[in-house]
Structures are given as structure tokens and as C-alpha cells.
Image (cartoon, rainbow, N blue to C red; front, side, top):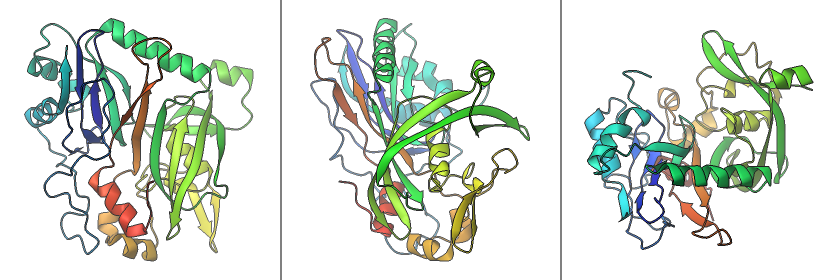
Amino acid sequence: MRAVLAPEMDCRRVLGRVWSGWRRGLAVSTAPEDAGFGIEARHQRQPRGSRLRSGPLGDQPFPGLLPKNLSREELVDALRAAVVDRKGKSGELTLLSVLPELSQSLGLGEQELQVVRASGKESSGLVLLSSCPQTASRLQKFFIHSQRAQRPTATYCAVTNGIPTASEGKIQAALKLEHIDGVNLTVPVKAPSRKDILEGVKKTLSHFRVVATGSGCALVQLQPLTVFSSQLQVHMVLQLCPVLGDHTYSARVGTVLGQRFLLPAESTKPQRQALDEALLRRLHLTPSQAAQLPLHLHLHRLLLPGTRARDTPIELLAPLPPYFSRTLQCLGLHLH
């Protein structure tokens, strides 16, 4: 996740890194200093050891990911090292759990860091942090206003197992959280009633556009216009094209004689994503390696408000993690 510490009106600090999942590890890249709030990271160099490889992968199938047993000190050091511009659950190792140490490491004193915007737990990309309550409030108002006006502020890149029928369009679905076998899962709701809405069912909407296709997969641009847990993953499952590395919802897509269909969400338990032999060969993965495939869903672009109300929104860009880029190379897909 590319961590961005939002400006405190006159005092700005911007963090720049790619965080691949809340607990999976960091896919780090070096970010240049920039005189303004907008940090463009298109041309950042890759870290040592992250060069793309198209041959057999051996023991490093997903370059750019740090070990899962990352210590608190290593996580804080990685986030502190992510500063590119400076102008101004209990016991579980997560980004939230190390924010106090990160605040101290950055010399913020009594100012507490808070997460303003972030991608999902298992996805990679940008995360927006702020130590200024006024700035955090201003950013939240900008996101809420944009959402009400149906102007997307976040753009994700996803690699899907399967190619959507339409090249672009909207995905609309009513979703709810349901506790199934001890896990909270997002479940679609057909024709929700007024009572359903009052009980927590939410109507969700995403834009999608197919950027490239190859080897039975697609590179898809996704822009959510609502916010709901696992919204994008479930939306792509409803298109019968689960996100590559989705080991939670992809089992809801069944196949018989080459034809895909949806299985009942309530009775389909999460399981490791099953990939056919041809795709495994293209990705140079063994079945055991494929079982550890990271979710290929990346918050690539985020719009923030300009300094003044009428200013053009500022664009933040996060480069793809090395494992994501390598997958694109293996599949012959290109992000333009």
C-alpha cells in the first residue's frame, strides 16, 4: 500500500510505499521527493531483488513481498522510510497497531495518526494517513461529496481469472455481511426489501473497464462508487470473473463443460482458488504456490482535493507491486 500522510494545511508530510496486504508484507519501492502534495510514482525504480522473471520461480514465487512474520520494528522502519515529502485487534500486527510507533518515529509528538482512506485488507496500493483532524475531516467530506455526485475518486487495477462479457459497464448489487461458519462474508441480496435496507443491506455500484486480455484472463480497471466490505471482489465474482488470488469468494464460481455459473453464496465455503493447468503453466506456478497467490487487486490511483475549493483534484499514483507486474508479463497483459 502506498502510504500517504495527508497535508496538515500548512504542514505536509507524504509517505510513499506499496503495501501488499495488511498482513502479507510490503512490496517496497523508492519514491522521489516532490515539492507539492501530488506525488506521482509512475517511474519509481524497483527495489533490489524485484526484477521481473518469466522463468521458473523456485522459492520466491511472489517477488516484492516481505515475510508474513514481519516484526513491529521492521514494519515501523519500512513506513518511516516511506516519507517522500515533509513540509509541515489486540496483539495482531497490522498497520493500525503500529501507528503510535510510526507517529513517534516521524517526530509527530502527541499528534495521532489516523487512516483516512485505504484499500482492503488483502489488496495492495495506496493508504492515506493524517495526523491533523481538520485535514482528515476535509478529506472525508471530499470523498463523501464525490460519492454522492457519483464521481469516482479511487481507481483499482485487477487481474481476473476469466474475461468479462462486456468491455466496460456498471456493476450494481445489493450486498450484506453474513456470519457464516465463524467468518463474516459479503453476500449478494436479490431484490432487497425496505426492511433489508434498514437491517444493513446496501446497494453498491462499481464502474469497470477491461484494459487488456490474454490467456483467459483480463486486466480490469475498477472504480467503486460505494464502499462496502469486499465490494470489488464480489462484484467481479458476479461477472463470473473472480480476481486472481481471491481465496475467499472465487469458489462461488462453478464450471461445467467449460461454462461458468454462480453457486449459492450462503452455502459456498471459502477455499483456495482453483486454477487450470494451462494458467498455472503460464504463471510458472505449482499448485502449492498458487494456493499462496496474493490477491491481484491494487489501489492504483486516488484523487484528493486541491488546495482551494475550485482547484483541479490532485492525483496520487502507486506503482504495481513486483508480483503483480510479473503476472502481467506472464499473461502478456499491459497496463497503459
